[in-house]
Each structure stands twice: as C-alpha cells, then as structure tokens.
Image 1 (spheres, helix red, strand yellow):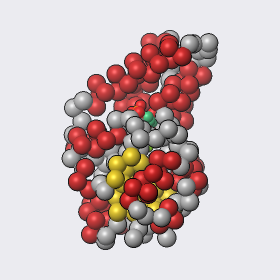
Image 2 (tube, helix red, strand yellow):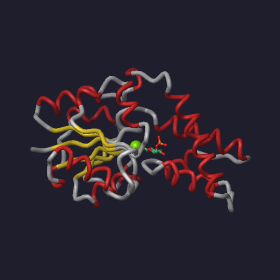
Image 3 (cartoon, protein in one colour):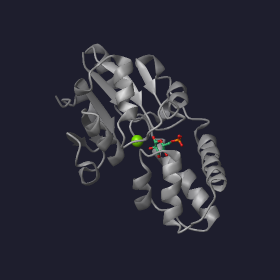
Length: 213
Ligand code: BG6
Ligand code: MG
C-alpha cells in the first residue's frame, strides 16, 4: 500500500496568497513593508514562527508573549475574513484529476498541513471525501521542518513512511518529508525546492506525473 500526503496552502488551494496578504496588512499597520521575497520564508511554517520572521523583517523587538499572541490573533482574523467565502473555484489546477487518479490507483490519501484552519478549508472546498486522514496544525506540537505532521498522517493511514510521497510547495515541507524518510514532489521553483525528489512548476502537471518510487 502506498500513500500520498498533501500540504494544503499553495498545493491544494491558493490560500498561500491570503496568508501573505494578511501578514502584509499586519506589517503595514506596524509601519513596515512585508514583501514577497520575505514571504517565501513563511511558507509551511507555523503561525507563531511566521510572526517571529515578520517581526524580524520589521526590526521589531522586545514584545511580550501577550503582545505577540495578540498580533498573531489579529493576523489570523484577517486571514479568516479573507477565506470566509472560499469555495471549489480556488482549488488549484489538476488537483481534482490527481485525487481521482490516486483513488483509482488505490493510493491512500492524507492532508499534512501546518495550518490550524486546514481541516476547515478542506471541508469548504468539498474535498473531504477524498481524504483518508486529515492532520492539520491542531493535531501536532512540532512544526515543519519537523516531520511530525507527515509521520502522524502516515501512522493514521497505516502506511510505512518509506511508501509515502509528500506534495509540497515550501522548503520547510520538503525538508520535513526527507526527515520523515518520505519521498517528495515540490511544486514551484527548483531553486527553492531543489531537495525534493521531483520538482514541477505547478499543480497542473500532477495528474500525468510519474511519482517518485
Ligand atoms: C501553512 C502555511 O500551511 O500554515 C503558513 O504555509 C501558515 O503560511 C501556516 O503560517 C499556519 O497557518 P495557520 O492558519 O494555523 O495560521
Ligand atoms: Mg504550502
């Protein structure tokens, strides 16, 4: 039995842009510009680690834990507003056909997302019936590049890690897959995702892709 474990943001759906826009809005309120080059470092990492990176970019120091939690909550509020009307029209190209193919070929399918909103978004997209296991940020203590989100998914599926392929758009996620002894497919630029077994420029390539063995 083999399995495919999907990251969510930037792989199944284009929510990576909403995370970015929400952090950008928070940064503007704090008085600095948060640009797309810096945003690359936020992909795949947890909300609080993302906040640390954003604050570092704006050279904001010495905040109390309470202040940090309030800022992370504020960003999450903006993000939740932005995704409140999300629907299947924002599923990325090729994902429905790829899921159908995996199901037809007998693969187990799981979500392995750092986002605490991961399960909720999958439901809104109507994709829940495809997934045999859903692991999101509510179920793990350690964030990517730690492999916990993926190893937990493999455990729930009952598939050995070496028989799992992770689909990821972040460097942190590709590192997590390798740390968990899994194969990976990177979605995006090979400059950023060079450690993946295969890199494709976008999700439209997935339905016809030979998965790494
Ligand atoms: C990841 C995103 O999937 O989830 C990150 O790539 C995001 O950008 C992280 O920060 C945590 O998401 P959330 O919804 O729990 O703040
Ligand atoms: Mg992602």
